[in-house]
Length: 292
Image (cartoon, rainbow, N blue to C red; front, top):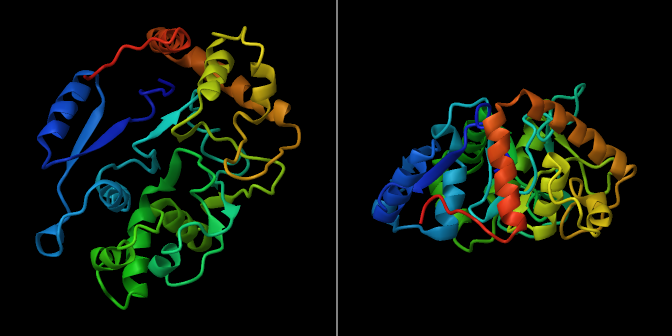
């Protein structure tokens, strides 16, 4: 709903062995979404099948096999965008600092991450619940190579089988920890303790209020809700599951949406109109499913 699909390719990754996924993919193609059917990992023939959580996690480590884009942003299956995603200012730190923003907090909620990386990590990039998670195309291969070496030359998949056994790991924390330590020229950590804050436009599961604010601030629709001004203070800059208070939050939100409004003026009018219609439907508790 909140993406310029002329600039950002929206890709759905589905299981090749699933008949239901092929039915869904055929439907999504009719709506001009990109579809990739991913084969089950080769190791399942000898090590047993992986489903659900582990299948999605494994797939994320191979996103460079599924897209040729210079930058790949991943959203969990239960994730959502709650406002318009500017293709620059929602990803990079600033005009003067074109590094990808990573938003962690101190802590370790996924204890197998250090097993995967073979060192203790002190930051959690998943618990703050910010989406999409953006990485350079090269980072995926670089991480797999690093883990293979750290595991004494084992293949990445062999290492994955071991560190995924207890499901106590986060693919995003593993990727982000590697990126922030070994590719810091391309990534910038912005902690929850950094009162300057950093923009995010999506989250897992999402909050209804965020979508309402996104519709109001992006498209000037539904702005008569009296609760919006107060909620708007942490709308873009929030870190979930942790205390955070940005300095000059209102000014930063206003600056982001100024960029959004300028960008929307350059988009085809029919695309903006479709986004507005989606907002109107949502605000009236209605929806039009594209695939049933």
